[in-house]
Length: 398
Image 1 (cartoon, rainbow, N blue to C red):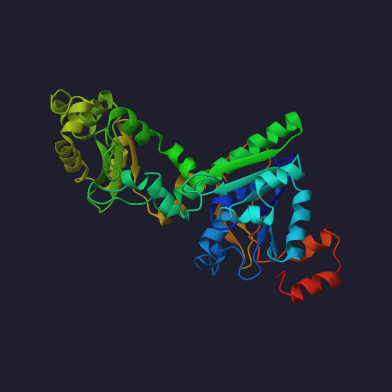
Image 2: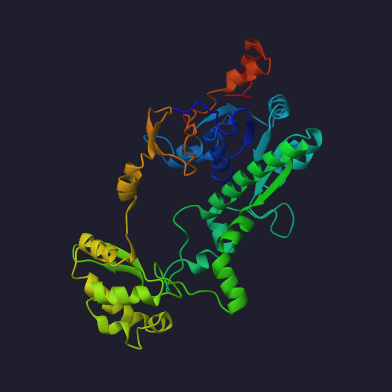
């Protein structure tokens, strides 16, 4: 086991956060060794705690985004609660918030205010659409931002658009917030100054829309919705197999098409046929291309199809379910699963994808109960048991 410290060991993060975007960002920091203090409402906490009960009574979103944090349940509308949080921020390296636009400023917890008071502090404001502009005050739930950013328009089938099955806008914003904090920490190491970091969900997901956005801006129209197919490559789709499975394959160039035709389809003449010989021709004759591929794979089991495609050097995959991913042999072979603590006992979780060979494993601490660390954190600020009891009696803390 490595004796090296984790990369963010010694960094303290205070987060007034809810839902996914900020919590997922700060969880990345916690996994890398930062101390993350999560500020929650006393009356129920982060509302993501109530999304579902799928994780043995806990909400799956909350378990995913909040391991390794300390929970302080405090009412920020009470001056005593707000003062406690301000004292925590004064001793922190990073502050992150994703409250509704203007809410943090009303509390004096916006990045500009905090960085003016604490020059070494890195303060991150995560919003739906940014602090200024005609959409600044618009509600920004993940699905709505997926629509505004155009993701839904290019996802789904020709007949029906669809949102992504994961909160793509939240995740995009979270990962830019995470990388923004890392960049700001490097800047502070060089200059001694922290500073504000601003992330908007719309702009984060807009960056992820790079291919269709550039295709549309420069090519005249956006790529068509094609389900799991590709708008400009064929064959590139999911094909049913004889045992009820589905196998996806992708032919990236005409050399691969030749190998597919000769070794899998057993129709070598298709390599020279003008209707199929080039990707442009195959895309223009997509229905015929899919038909000949589908006929060949439909006579095989999924395992036989995968074996034949791999033997021919054709990129392929199974159409896995969530359960298949949880039992994926590659993840098992790479030892990517760990048990994390929680109020309901151990829960299985995947190691973060950042791997540093030879270094320590990510921390992957327990999921906190609401207010689990309130007393310890307030004691750390110098409060007495009597003062803490008075705050609890008045409903300021939980």
